[in-house]
Length: 451
Image (cartoon, rainbow, N blue to C red; front, top):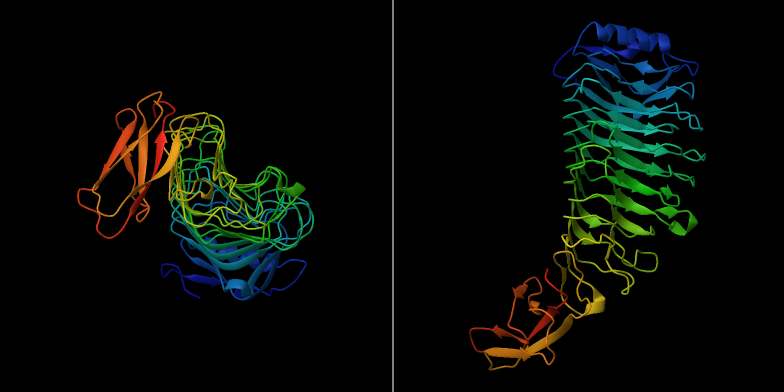
């Protein structure tokens, strides 16, 4: 056990016996009283089973709590009270690390695992190496936590009753935090909260902003009809490297999605970024459903196959605009399904799709809010034979407008040339004779109006 900042340590077991299933309240309360006399001290729970009847409240307190990892387990005696409540905790720069909070299961959502709600926005706190198990209410509820570090937190439910609340609920001005390696896991076939297993949302006054979510994962979640793994209603948050495993769905997965990016009710600025594997090889109906404008999604396309998405990685809902999407690698399981479903009705979104088998092009670009090819567009190929330096392609029909052309060398699909030729033709000038063999270019002529 390491002390925090070199301050004094209070060992809970020095205050009395532990291990009484009816409650170790006298021992734990004694230790809390001792730690309260020494702001900045550490309350140490050595490995063992601790039982508490009621809620361990740290309101107005200023000390850290450290245990010995999974060997330190704090059990709730009753099923209708929060286990550890940090509402109006006043410490700054403190640490909570190395313990398990064990709930009673059941359906009483008044039992939460760890609650942090602070009207003053306390911060600079570290939460690490914590398991929160079997609470019918939120395993972890954070409201107005700022500039803190949260790492290797596992939120687990094993009981069979339907889950009425999310595993993690983050709301209000919970800003500027680093969440690393957060895991959400179910071990039985019970439906999750119908909105989202994880919810990050505004509280009607402020929206969560500038949080960094790195390396999160979920396993064995059971997503109901119209449900999602994550619902995000915030601004300027970054999600990087999410992993999902062994998903299950109800009602054939209708309306389900990995992520739903929704509009907060206040301060709706957008600016969120999702990057990494998008969305992953599972059986949900959509990967990411985007309802909020001005966001960015960049990553590797989810694999397909018999149980994969078959496309439908991203859906833009009506009126979404100024959104940037760039997807490359992998492939869609069903060639006929688009990778991006655009229902926005807007012309100012940008989409780059690194591969779509139905076009036989090394790359397909949606630029300025329009999928290509559209009505009036033309796709084809040009061969410049060995010994030639210039090739001219003439089109037999007149264009309705001056066209724009995307030209992509087959041997370098990452390179794209945009040209605005004269009506009826365009020219590729290599600048030197072709000496090694025929050179092929794929082209896409956009003739459906101005971009």
